Length: 323
Image (cartoon, rainbow, N blue to C red):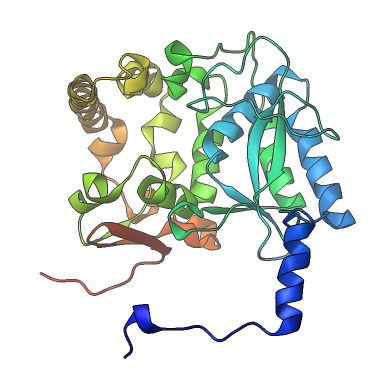
C-alpha cells in the first residue's frame, strides 16, 4: 500500500473545478440544514404544540412531567420520513413563530419570569447512536396521554415551583398526578427509559457502564402489586429519600457521592421494611405480580447487554440460564 504522503489524488475535471469556483465566488453558501416540513407533518407539529401548551393547570403539570421525561427523546411522527426527528424544547415564542430556546442546564431549572412554550424543534445535527433515543408521536399517543393524565379525577391547587428545591425531587414535584398514571406512563415505553439510563449523558463510558453486569434481565411489578400505587403513604413517606442529589450539591463530586449513597441506603432500607410488612408479602406474591404488558406490550421484558464501555437494551429475555 502506498505511503499517504506520496498519494496524489486525480485532478478535477474542468466542469468540477468550475463548479467549486462558482460556489466559492457566491459566498460558499451551504444548503439549508432543514427542508420545509410536509403539510401533514406540520399539522401534527401544530397539534402537539397546542396540546402541550394547554392553559388548564392540570394539563400544565402533565406537560411539565412529559417534558422532564422526554427532553432527551428524538421524537418521530408515526409514518413520517424515518430520517426526520424532533426534540421537545422550551421556547420564549409560541407556535407559528421561530423557536427561541430557553437554555438551562437541567430540564427542571427555572425557565424565567416570562411566559414560555413547549415546542417541537426539528433535529438538524448528525445522528449518533449514543444519544439517539427514539420516541414515537401519533394521534393514538396523544389520546393515551389524555387517558392517563387528564381523565382520572385528581385536583391541583397550585403549580409547583421550579429550581433545585422542587425539581430536585420529582416525587414531590409531581405528587398531585396519580401515581398509577405516572407509573403506567413509564411502563408503556419501558425500553425507552431503560435505554435512556445507559445511553443518556448521565452514563458515560467506564465511569458508569463498566460497573453493570454483562447481561441481565429486567421485568417490572404490576401496578396492582406495587406499593407506590396501592399504598398512598409509601411515596409520601419515601419521597424525601428519592430526592436528586443536585438539590443539595452541584459542584463537588465528593459531596455528591456521599449524598446519593446515604439516601440510597436509607431508601433501600425503608423500601425493604415496608414491603416486608405489607399484606402482599404476608400472603406471598404470585406470578401475576409481574407486569405482563397487558398481553400486547413487548416492553414488559427487557434484556440489557454490556460490552466494555457500551451497553444496549432490547425487548424480550435473551440468552440462556446458567447455574
